[in-house]
Amino acid sequence: MDFNTYKDERLIAYYLQGNKFAFSVIVSRYEQQLINYVYRFVYQKQTAEDIVQDTFIKVLISINRFNNKFRFRSWLYKIATNLALNKIRTEKKHRNNRNFDDVSANIYNNKTPLNIAMAQEENNRIETAIRSLDTKHRVIFLLRIQQQFSYKEIANIVKCKETTARSRMFYSVEKLREFLEKKQ
Image 1: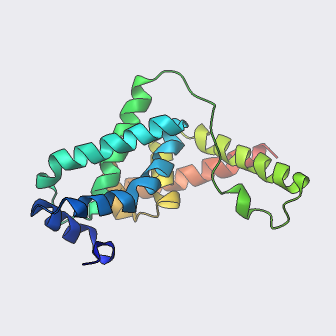
Image 2: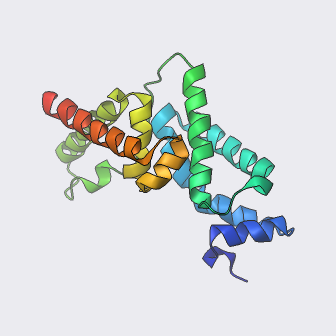
């Protein structure tokens, strides 16, 4: 039986029937995606990893209450988002240490030192622009752009109306555009 081809909801059903391996497939499917997503809130790798671990623990604790009317992925991201936002609320300090992912790798094909430096500078501008968004707009932006959730799914995750999610996304894009144009 190749569990990797099964949909999340089927894996949950197998897990609830006692197959512990089914849940490990879910973890391996989403762990790195969630770490990358949460990292954009906390900007510290270890903290992001801890939040993701807490996310999977919460999922295990409440998996019996999962409503299969909704997509598992949306429910999982809702839990991770709430934990990340709670962490932000409890920490007053902003951390500046961060490692950049593969964004700069795709900017320039020619990896000369100058091009790498330019790509890193562009990454810094984009990260600073994203950080300039307030939390409620950053959540919407990251869920839509980075994780490619629909507006309906985003509304479910952040507990708002779909039109609110759309307007926050529009606002976010406008603010990012203004920020990046101003910083040129």
